[in-house]
Image (tube, rainbow over all chains, first blue to last red; front, side, top):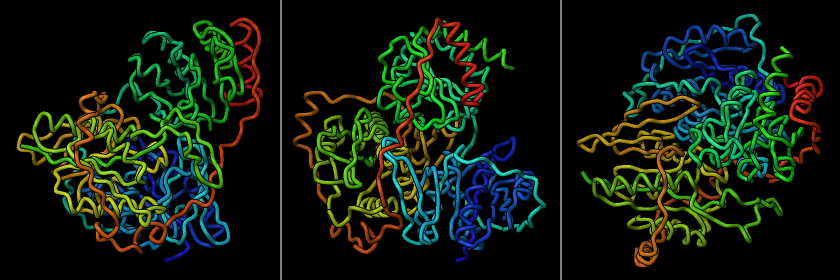
Length: 323
Length: 263
């Protein structure tokens, strides 16, 4: 085993996700403490463009497992390919983005290699030579400090926790890895990207959410308009989802998505414990509610006591004026 | 085609509970414990499949003696029998050791599919069922919101929801599936179900019954350990912006732009 950190890059059709470059940032801090280098890996089919983007991120080396068998997502194949790269690279720590993809591939690979895995972390540091991770549990109602008893170990880090590194460094060397894959038993045969999810809720910088106060499906219109103006994602409370006003994929809370954007605007949401658990680590929280005693005001940085149907359109207009 | 289905259950505090900490542990006195909501979606799907196609639902729960109550709930809504993996020697581990324990249990039960939650709402690990699949050399499909078995009962077609996308996945059976919220409404137990659950068998298994090496599980087998539990950092007090909607909106936009610098 080396002292190196290996980051597992993740992409979509349009390119590498931002979280890949955030992982490099975290890895650089850990590598400085452990005295190792930061390397990256790209896995998939026809991923030359992803590799070209990653080599400029200031890495010592980029492993590329480019195989026709890694086109459509198949958990077994991706774990198999990654395990083969890890055996070659011998890293002390492997970092993933704590996305659905990252959590799934890391769990399968960790079991395959019999490694420990700490998911969904918000900080990582080295303490007396040991890796210590910070992760919210109970959706953030408590914060755990978790220690890896030994290395190697795998870790997934939430998106939007640290800034991404700039990809403007001299190109790192690429090492192509020929992987041997078996025919997977479970695989994606078709991807249906939901048209409604313009910005993925879990990774959005800005989230605007509506709750019981929107009063019906059409009440989400001003919430969506403000989200669009801000380039943010649309969220909802469980009350609004349970009422059938909006799809459950928008639900923020302990059941639903946990989010930590730089700006969270809660409109017509009173602030049930399970909702607060899912958003209270947002950087700035704005609450708009008619009820001055709503619990949401206790955790809000800025509150407006008023009718969301008046405040949201006015706020939308003012933000547009800012350009 | 009848299906033998195992559902992996977990006992967790109700999501409306406040979590209080003492000596780096969650204070459990007064907490209302429930069946994990995601596992509950998996249980519901298993019950529906057996209602449609025949077969048997076996609930498996790894947890302390107190969790019997949660197992009874699963039996009350329709699970046929239950296995309770209960042994202090198995406790105190991590996701890897939990997966090892569950995999050892599953080796002793014949099944066509295993259902679990996509994550548990207490430790939010989202890794145990996937690890179990790999340990048993089975395929898995995560975060399932639609499920249809093939006519011959040897494969399944799923829709899964992940990272804001929806994918259609196919898999052979047996396989491990994790349930996501959109999979369906869960049922509540009837009085008859609650009474009937008292007569259904719950079998206790300990480390010896699983034939598991104590060094591989519990605290000894864990690769990671919790050092400390803390409450989340308190947020500084906020400000209420006065005035009518127009005035407040204008001031709010200015504060977000100039003071908070988030827009």
